[in-house]
Image (cartoon, rainbow, N blue to C red; front, top):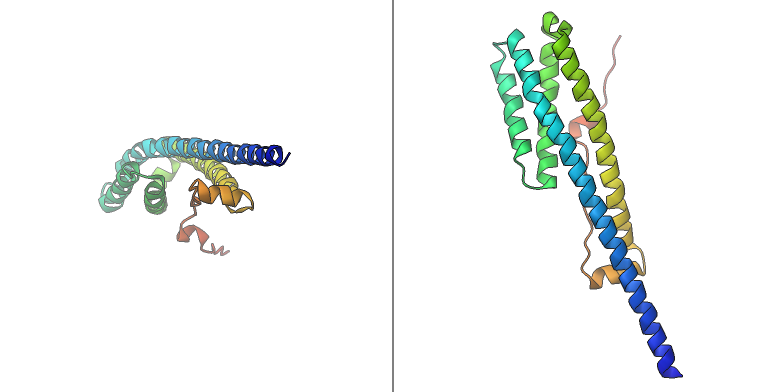
Length: 182
């Protein structure tokens, strides 16, 4: 009788470990899918920027320093090897994009250019998709980290060497308070 109880406990324990492992694998795969979707949106964004820069070049040829900075930041972001490195490079890229749009304020003809306006709208749409992809990625990472931290699945996580994942965070500039003056 004792042997049957021990076997039953071991079977239940094995089923639990397998269950936790499978859940972790599913969540890890969802995280990879979310990272892949994020990459696809970033690629769209990076592909759009050269068109934007070319449009601005036609109006602001003597602003070469700003335009070069945007392209260099884009190239660094495109060639970043990991999601974390790409996220850091993307923050610098976002900063240079803001300077590009600030530059457009100095050129009324550019601000009214239909091609420029269309590119801005496309970029805004991509930015919204990126925000959604980042939220989804962070939601999956939250589930993974919760699974790793909650008892008793934390015991299984330690035994199977599951590790917590990092969230994607916004750049410090985006956290700054925006002043509105009338």
